[in-house]
Image (cartoon, rainbow, N blue to C red; front, side, top):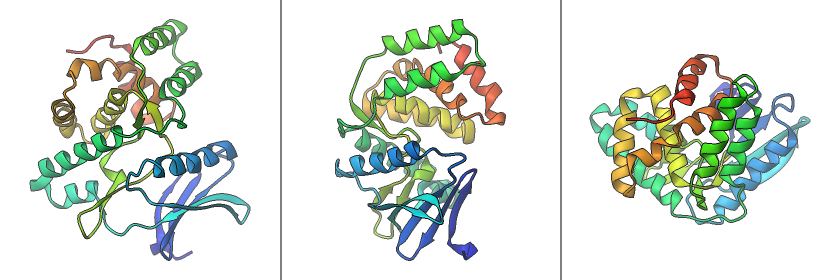
Length: 250
């Protein structure tokens, strides 16, 4: 495979361009068949909402490995645009939040429920004590139940802007239906981990545009930090554990 065709390479997953298509190739040692098929199903269900996302074209076996094929979208991610034009970061952040609100305006009744997924993740965290897990489950159950489309990994690298200025949203592997503020809390968490200088600015902008109290989004932070902890990224662990232990935020 020509190296210039590789778009991303992570543990157990290779993403590469093949003509006008993108192929995600999965290693079964890291990704069970059910996860791969669920990602394809998420993609199909989100397509039905009318959101601008790359169209799913095939789920297949390539050299014995499961693969998902979607359309290739030419353009630059919002993250790339931010990096190239630091003087326009506020403009791109404003665009980013508007796109997130567009996602949250949609319904996809057959997507997995966010609360169910979060409960499973909390239960799987055997390296935190039972009392903390109980507190997290209790907090989660007390949060209002909504049915909005939640991306699950919404960050500036997952939005492509094409030559006409139109946006296309990538990576629906973590999509659920649930409370929009939970998804905003996850995006705030991702900014805090990767671009901390933008985290507070993002949260203020999201809360202003969505007419949401900042404190309401912050109530989700211990829950989404616990969810992120299940990814077992060593350099994030200490940071996330501190967030899980914080009950309230200023």
